[in-house]
Image (cartoon, rainbow, N blue to C red; front, side, top):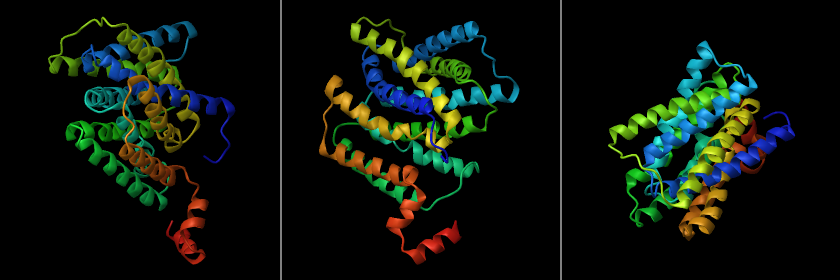
Amino acid sequence: MNQKPERLTLIAFVVSTILGGNSSIAVRFSNVEVPPFFGAAIRFAVSSLILFVVIYYLHLPLPKGRSLTGVLFYGVLQFGAGYSLIYWGLLKVPAGVFQVILALVPLLTFCFAIAHRQESFQWRILLGGLLATVGIAVVFRDRLGADIPLLSLLAPILTSACSAESNVLFKTLPKAHPITTTAFAMGMGSMILFVVSRLSHETPKIPQLPATWIAAGYLILFGSIATFVLSLYVLSHWTASAGSYQLVLMPIVTILFASWIAHEELTSALLIGGLLVLGGVYIGALMPQEVFKKFVFSKHATQKLDKAE
């Protein structure tokens, strides 16, 4: 970002980070009674329906042509593929661990943005990526001894890739309103999730526990509608990599609330690994290039680095 963010954009960034950070916890509660893919499909179907009602009453313009195609493909990546992995992974992976690994999204977004020629390469990404990888290895090693299947631990990494690519894709689309984009994308994602639920032979179930209903209500109103409308609003004003920075802060929100609400254990390996991941993402995606050069390179090396870039 070259310009100081507007106050409204910054508020949207903070609020969506807090709301999104608690979504993983709500999904864990929802998965207790409701089959994961079916629960995700219902969540986004209801959220999409509510948003279309809002669109009707506010007379918001609908995406057309290339914009509509892009929005639907965004829905396939973000809500169809991404949330299939999220709901399936959270059956076995604690919310705090899942969210820590999702902190890779800013780095992946930056890499994908470079591949799409939206942003230029910077050497600090390499160091940040290596540090974040070490952090994930620490978390993996700790959780492999906690009876969590390796395949489940791969789910948040694949989710990160889906989220990162969808962020970059959104920046290539013609300008569309965040509410209409979210409505169409969630509608597309819900259809995919219903198919996945059917293929997985899930049995639809109406929840009985009050905690499940509270979790479902939170996921629809706050974890879906509010979080993604605000996130797309931020993304429409910031670069793709800058808009994904909230994934760096979400693990802190998730771990703190998960230890309080879900009584998830705060192990030393999780804290150390989480700090390494956050540190790596900060260096690779948040640290200003000038600061990185000042502390890492000598004056002579900095001059060479400038020429290389």
